[in-house]
Image (cartoon, rainbow, N blue to C red; front, side, top):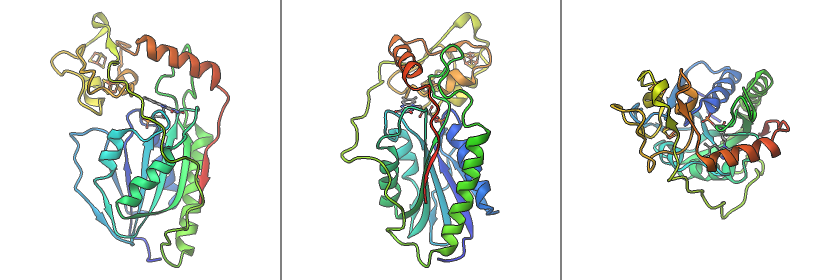
Length: 267
Ligand SMILES: Cc1cc2nc3c(=O)[nH]c(=O)nc-3n(C[C@H](O)[C@H](O)[C@H](O)COP(=O)(O)O)c2cc1C
Ligand code: SF4
Ligand code: SF4
């Protein structure tokens, strides 16, 4: 394989757990010329990039209902490769990642990238609360160490590959046809107006521009992807995910998925 000139990190990460893992993997590769394309906030546009075999791309997305969220798919698909080696990484909240890794493989392959390694890591669940923690504070030190080690392995593989072979990625879990996507279009977090200081941190963190800038208590439910970025970023606890349907899901996750899962890598 050609000597790698740069590493491009391309990811969607509303609550930043995917971002933490991607950065640790990048550090593990030891590559110095790193470009970051954080596609979470739609107003932050990045130049449409074409990459060739001399670049390595790391793609990252959270898992939503066992799939890649459609917002991530459309944003990640802006990038084109030309036999460009790629690493695919999904972050899930300690339940399951089901078809997400397989779907991410298809997304990047359709864009001209050649996946050479894959990883499924665990991050604090979007619906975790201090009362009902689910993978709280993950990725933690141990996860990040594994991400660093994964980066090192990727480089060893890249250095030993004669060419960027289509079939060099081991089999990864997942089934096709993929799971049916879930519809959350009638749900969004709410604001406790008496606690809100109008700091607009939630507005700036929202990946779909669903929160009204003039009045952050107003959220466009049709745009909201229930990612909880606004809830996690609110400095005064005014933004809450109090919808009964999500609370039921959070209780179910807390009861059934509290046993720690460990990252899996496929190199
Ligand atoms: C709508 C939605 C669906 C989710 N579905 C799953 C799932 O199927 N399995 C799982 O383990 N975690 C699931 N999660 C949790 C996220 O995958 C997890 O919190 C991830 O760390 C978020 O990544 P981010 O911090 O980069 O945004 C879901 C979260 C949301 C908001
Ligand atoms: S309003 Fe919805 S989409 Fe926007 S940050 Fe909050 S939960 Fe995510
Ligand atoms: S982040 Fe919290 S305090 Fe700031 S505007 Fe949003 S709801 Fe209000």
